[in-house]
Length: 383
Image 1: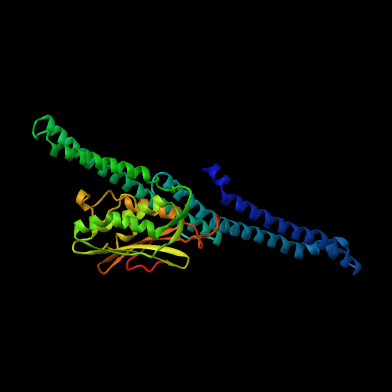
Image 2: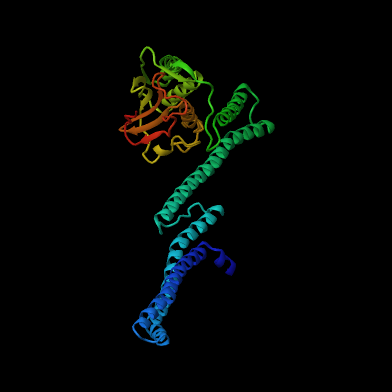
């Protein structure tokens, strides 16, 4: 404890402050007691007083006052040094203690905003870091739990079918093998989604971007999805201009548009409607898929792009996929230098993404790259 006290920042600050104060007092005292005394004696001697008497008079008056002032200055400097050291060292000590708590796994640790402006800035930065770490830990835990759940369901079904086949509870007919194939295919799709999804904190490293026509790619995706809308009893509207040129990966853009249309089929109750539209504005191409239905609760909107997050919690095959599609889509869009967002209100849900046009794309390294998806409760007007 003694070593920690003597080696601490507060002790060093106090020691430095005392050294400066004592040096100033020593200089003033030396000047007064040596130079001032000699000048006083010379003046008194010139006036006819003996030198010894003049020196005694100086010591009894000025010298005593100087010594008392030195004592008071020393005590005052000690008090001020301790106060200053504590004002700086205590907040930093709390930051260190909070850092140790975070290292031990307590991501709720925060520090109060106390001390000088620089120390307050350190506290603010630490609290922002702690909040980010807490959020990442929440995402990591949810990722592990949800991934385990997604794997457990088809594996449990497969195990049940195989046990039933082994015990001759169900016949080994085409229908049984079809069910087994569907569960195996579900595992394959999940594995492919996990391969396509970067690890938390990483970014998609996309292929070399080329000039592509977003309108043509969206039109092709709409043609592929058309039969699914007819089978679901939904009204599907397409509003696309002749051409919209951007720099992107054509396979990635097709994947994103296809995923949004699949979600439209999956989450729009019949006889609802889904609309695909695209337009250019302010050097940006905006592609939007909107659908009617119950919408997304405001509490769920900030999380829809998270890995494995699903608004519908039952996780049945009929209720949707694994909750990875939108996360992959946003990563792809942002790797092309675009933005992605979602809004839901008044029975209408709208998912959109924007990409810079060929003429509007900034040079490499210039500001204006990928940004986080924008989410709000209400129909988005977006960029």
